[in-house]
Length: 445
Image (cartoon, rainbow, N blue to C red):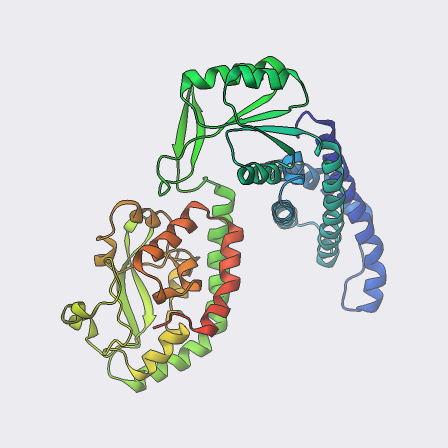
């Protein structure tokens, strides 16, 4: 399951041993902690929770396999990717434990489970750092031969592959064959070539058992990253906005609703005060409700606190000549329709708080491309419409990168970057950077 290399099988066995040790340590630490904290319940006998390992360990190993946690390429790759894989594996393990406790109604101490997860995460992190050094010593002498690449590109390949790199300027199959026959090459990275020219290079690699990696030439940098997919005997390049990862998308949907509901409840008193201030400040409704383009362009009614005078939408056509944003988007720095209170709400982005209702209803996400009015959504053309393949969000890369200081094309480029490289980690990074961006008020209007 974890590959043919003894090192990778050993890594898995070490990780499983660390998990079992973590459970034992959690049990031993639980008693002294209980004496310091009287509110903790008495510890249950080990016989009541050891059997959980029969379910938890296989599930954890399957998730670790899915995250490539035991692969040499992960251990020798960027440290942040290794730690990310570990944390996601632990997160899924936590979810499995929670489901077991709920479904089986097992009488376990939550504090023991929390202690086990904390101890196992700490010990696994230490184990991964040690395994990383072992992997570099074991695999670090492996050699990747790169054809037709410059020094900087070859150096970058070496960092990503975790191997020594040797460059070969010639793409002549005979030159490659002579170098491979000299020995010491584990894999060969080939540049894009026509089929006939490529055949000789791949055959030279096959003769000595070296792996051949063939670069795929990007036809257009604005297209999604291509992936290879076999359909019967034919290999196709698949262009998708992002890799379909149903577990991650499910987690995103659950987090949107749970975190959105929690934030809605926490900010409810603040929103009541703002609603009162809007009502007393100017004539008109408290909320501004507008049709916006949602997932795949489907319209939905987005909520905001009203920041303009009543009837401002009817004045939009008269102000089109003052539009300061290129493309189909309409933005004015000193919009005469905005009220005094509305200007403050916009600069602090407090006017967006009611959109938590849209998040709980599943029409928006906490993080995603900002939804445009339906009339502007319909005017999007070409690759810019790809931003509609993700559910719109309250915050996004554009929001934390300068907002209205950016032009339309820069805005769309950031949205496409988010769509093509979406991950839960990216969402978390955007959320963590949103508050400093709001405090700085950079680009806010």
